Image (cartoon, rainbow, N blue to C red; front, side, top):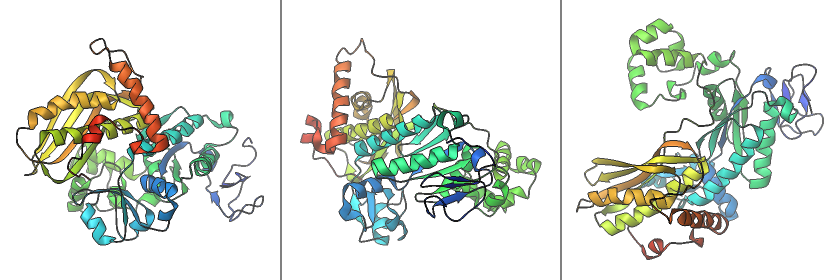
Length: 430
């Protein structure tokens, strides 16, 4: 269905019928799920975000949870990985300490993360995205930017319709929902995706951006964290509109280069392009322990579990890492960071664990730890498993791990368990 005639302003999200005027319902299929925007057929940069991804998978796989508040996370000293929209009505949020989440929502069902399952579902959605455009920039397992510029001839319709079709395909094939933001750059696309959740679709043009952004908190600008927000608030700047009222020279005078960046974002200007390599710097997993631990064997067993989770995330994101990072936090809250460089980039749990284990051994000299984490940095697109002359058995282990991944995704986390995992009862973690 090629886009012809008057500029497309409305599309039915169910049958993709196009109309040149704004309307409340579709005249072809009678659906009320229509979307109208005067520049709908001209926008091509998208932000796609899965809705409460981990929790939605758990509800899909266990229908008994559908009407219940669900928190994915665990451990009294752990944090919330994510939660469903029912739990959010109680005030539960991602990264919230678990004890606070359970205080806010005592009836919540708490589920331990199944990272290999989430990674596999994320991979399926990523493959669907790549069928629309090769320019996909992963942000996490369940989030990515897409640039669909020039895809109209390939698909026979506008990027907006391609993205609506993606939403419907994810719902039909995976029984999950995604929200889509469409605009002229990454910043506005992400802002749009946050404006209509869950199962939402929202577009923002460059012309309307300043007006839409003006009443929003400065935190809407990606990169403005608590520290910068506090600094801006102290200068009398609380909303994007407050930035708009100052000229660029004044912002630069007050905040240096950051001021110019903030001023550009305030008017919807954002120069960073969607890139296939992504801007992600690290892939990591960490856990806060239920009780402080000093036992070297117990910490090593935890390191293996975390190496598996980090590998799952790297595989879902389609990246390898050349540097392995170890993070520890002592009982007195002192953070210890160690790293080592690999001969070749990897995304395999075995390789991550083998590199991090000696780093951990140097730190397990009696000190008690309340947190342990492991990650990959110096990321690059995944290049496949390579022969390592210094480790002739590496390819064999890689093949076994890939086979185990398939089994875990089909039959659950416990479908394949290593000897280390079987013998390890270890301390509880989040």
